[in-house]
Every structure is written in structure tokens, then in C-alpha cells.
Image (cartoon, rainbow, N blue to C red; front, top):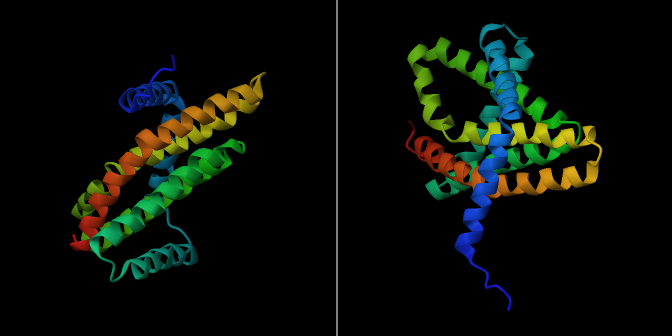
Length: 199
């Protein structure tokens, strides 16, 4: 007799697989965190060419213009789409020698450092507290994505490359669906609400 599919058991099993895979990938996730915060310090403390600074500022101005006039649900959806695409690319494009998640960790860290430095110079050190609610759920999701993206690239180093790639890919997909996306939904709700309220 064919066993009846149980959705709750399936979800429970996927969460177990996801958290087990995350735990087994902690060194890669720590690496992504280390790269991110190293370049955040670089972006905060080291002077950069004015042209690069203006490109970053113009990028954020363009984002602001895209969100102008959006309702709260539209704002949340916009932020979720941006972050979920970034997380997806950081994770699964990591298969190509881990280049994309490493470069993304560098770029995102540097931009955070630069923005933090600009905020401190304009509004003082206490302005940094506003970054905390925005990142409390988003950053862990992104770190997991980038870390697992780096791990995905290591399939090339083992003997049974295809089998290892399949295993890493399936586990990564489970983590993306059951851990990363829920974190990004919460992050988008918090960030979208704060932006909408002008906090």
C-alpha cells in the first residue's frame, strides 16, 4: 500500500535537513561573515575615490526613487524580491568556483561600511542604531546564502563531483526555501514598515 503523503512530516523533515546542513557548513558561513565585516571596516575607515562614493550614493538614490509612492505591501514585496534574488544568486551562482558569493560578500560589506561612515558623519554615531532593525533578519539570511554558495563550489575538489554537487544543491535548495526565504520575508516586513513610516 502506498504511504500517504503527510505535509507536516515533510516540512519537519526539510527543516531538520536544512538546519543540519547549515550546522555542517558553519565554517563556510563564518568565512562569508568574516569577509563581509572585514570589508565593512575597509569601507568605514579607508577613504575611497569620490567617483566610487558617488556611484554608491547614486545607486541608493535610484532605489529610493523606485520605492517612492509605493504602498506598504508594495514596499515589502519590492524589498523581498530584491533580497530573495540576491540570496538566490549568492547561493546557487556559487557553483562557479565560489566567485559570486565571495564578491558579493566583499561588495555588500564595503557598501555597508561606506554607508555607515556617511551616516555617522552626517548624523552622529547614534544614527547607526537604525541599521540594526534592518539587518537583524536580513544579514543572517544573506550570510547563510553566501556561505552555502562558497561551499557549493567545493564539489569540484572531491572525487565524485556530480554526486556531491547534487547533494549540495538539493540541501542548499531546502535551506533556501525553508530558512532563507522566511528570514527574508520577516526582514522585508520590518524594513518596509520602517521605511514606509520614515523611521
